[in-house]
Image 1: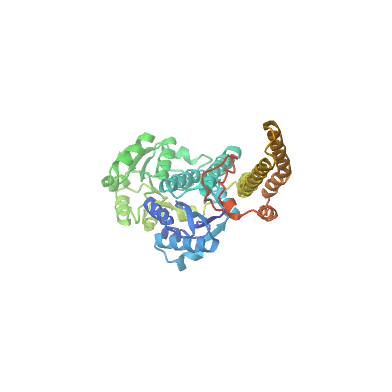
Image 2 (image 1 turned 60 degrees about the vertical axis):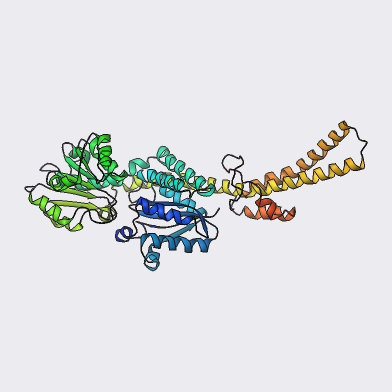
Amino acid sequence: MSVLVMGLSHRSAPVEALEDVALSRDGVAKLLDEVHVADHLSEAVVIATCNRLELYADAATFHGGVDEAGAMLSAHTGVPLELLTPYLYVHYEERAVSHLFHVVSGLDSMVVGESQILGQVRESFRLAQTSGTTGRVLGELFQTALRVGKRAHAETDIDAAGRSLVTVGLASVVPSVAPEGWAVGQVDGRSWRHLVEGCRALVVGAGSMSALAASTLAEAGADVVVGNRTPEHAERVAAAVGGTAVPMSEMPALIAEVDLLVTCTGAAGVVIPFELVEAAVARRGGRPLGILDLALPHDVDGAVAELPGVVLADLATLAQAQDADGGAVADHVADVRAIVVEEVDAFSAARRIAQVAPTVVALRTMADTVVEAELSRMQGRLPDLDDRTKAEVSATVRRVVDKLLHSPTVRVKELASQPGGADYEAALRELFALDRRSIDAVVKPDPRSGESGTDAGERT
């Protein structure tokens, strides 16, 4: 197994640095395309969200893969490698698998336990498949990872502990626009969702984060208006939540009217400038305006937070959010971590068994060749043997060979499933003088199903 991951996230870099490396879907596709001509990387999946940018790859060599991955991230984000390096982390082989399983389970998220990352990883994998940069190694890894993420949410209460970024963000701004008497952070025991009912909310953008915000607000009883540069996209999101789609040209007037503004467009620069919000505030008659900016880079000019009546929450402020029920969260996190450890061990064991399987097949193939040669020689020396005797001798020889090989081949698979199992595979090759070329020619089996695969060139 030669999985390599290089990236940066909210855990290793400030929001400002994450803004600098933000990649659009088109940018991710171009990064994936470069893998096709790489010397040390043969497969790749890129996870690009508001909180992380990670490149997963099948690396022929560790150092060569690290050098190429770093150069690719620098080139496609436009950030010099020397400025990027302090924020980068690298994981290899089993540590890379463990990291991905933590990510899909919500353990590495800004809001621990949030489930949106699972959908984002699934979409990242689909994009890589479309780009033709996934093969046997990352295909098995990401399919397993998605299953692990589902299992974590199905078998534990991590969902109760973890809230999506949208939910946390709304909880931070909704009280500011609630009816008179509700103070920010003091909702008298009532959920923020109760305060949304009857509010009018403008959602700018039509991506997954914006769609999640729109559906969350609609479910809580808000009147949702959706704006996007592509009218068809806005109409799709609005129709899904029973809201209204509007053109971007109506933005100035709507910001003066709505109670909440949620934006996540994925644009390269500021979409809602200070002057636009300042003019809207002047027309609001003192009514408060809650703004939730989930975009990376920012959609809203951060200076609007200084305007009277405006409460702004963005990724930087949400990163500081703390869950009040720390003890319960710790218990749920421990449950998920136990699942991750179990799944990493199982995946790694399966991969180790898959790596020794070609050697076992090569050994049995060599044995069959020897048996056939000896039976042919016997037939030449004893041409008068009748067919029944020949068949009995042939069956007896094959049974003897099978019995002699059974124990060592079964045992080497058992030992190979343990850490350091490659040593046993090497010993088997050495003891039986197996030609490495004969092993490499064996089609690799699927480590999960036990069936033969089709990629004879998979690296081990």
